[in-house]
Image (tube, rainbow, N blue to C red; front, side, top):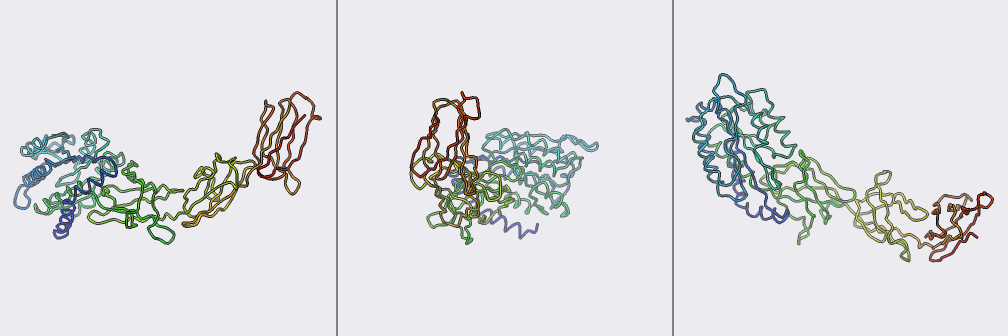
Length: 465
């Protein structure tokens, strides 16, 4: 990376670093707590770190600058540090690919131990990066309120048989760590492709670039990034709101943030403080949900995330009476079988604009197709007031109820309940037929057929005597 570009990046993050308390307060407001950031330094002490770099021994530069960073982090709240070292226990040859050790585990007040350990490390062995990353998952004790960061400092690529990229990806998918940072000490620019698959890579050709890169990385690890989610209406204006927005980590599938979208007092989407180190899958819990995959936030600037979410209202009611107040309406996207929502009679619900099919479980069942929901408009579906029919007999029996059509056909509505003498049924206005036989009469000749009309608000008793 060119010195000028890296310096500019550092200045951007330095500005954000000044506003860290603001971002943490915003996070605390959104989630109810401030997460602990745990930073594991994986430090290369392989034989090559004894070589010369920018006028000094590589490991002397690396440990001095890292100790300075530990000094600055020592008294920060909600920050914990740990140190893993590889290549420092066994000389080469022979090659010892198990030469990696957690020298200082996470814990309060351990900065002194990290400094002491760094001062007396001697470069000796090989470069088992993959194995070090693999063991790193055990370096982070279980914690529900922690962000786990790995900063790998190395002057060379994997020297053993492991696959650092695969290990890093597996750790991210498990949600154990966020995307790691990698600082290459005087490495070949051709190594960028090798390290980019492990994490966010910084090539440092000299000690000044190394120091600045480490500052930038720490700033990124500790700062959040300002963002806003624009829920766009049909006119592409960010005017939709009051919807649950869920931010999932794309790799692990774990929920990072859960919030109700809002417009501020100026009518604009509220500013959010988000961790830019995750790639997000964002779900707006509209009906149906609106999804946006692979959302990457750019650190150092305000991110605007647009999601098409135009909505209108569906209101379902009866013309009079309260007979259907407890009925539940099944709502489906037109032409699809999956039920999107169960909406109670008499209520209004927001839906993404489009066409929907409704199944209203009254007698007879009502199927409405291609009900259109429009932007910021309430579509009202009105169900006629039913009539009440009482079926009565002096003996329990068996019966079926039908709706009569204009073509003089009969459409099944329901079967009368067995084992009872009387049953009340609310029916929509129309023509009906009931067919009934008492259970104690064992001949089909005792079958009774009755046709009748149902009118809104009326009641009638159909007796089988």
